[in-house]
Length: 109
Image (tube, rainbow, N blue to C red; front, top):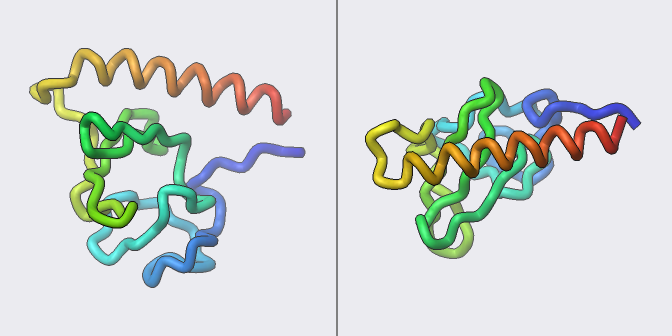
């Protein structure tokens, strides 16, 4: 089975903006994608920080604020700024997510 990058997949979560389309931008205002959408990169839910963390297609660690009922505020998704209070911890998480992604990618190919 060949690995397909998330940004090359088709949205399967019935998002009003992306359904049955690729999703290459992760901070569009009208996006309603679920965190489990096929287009979503490897993601870690960070309840203590009220967000989800994921590796953007450029390889940087991004965060998306959590909202009520398990939804996310995609319009405010962004890379973690080096001035953020949890920047140091985010560097470790980014490294671990990269390692996990590499292991998963290797095991598929």
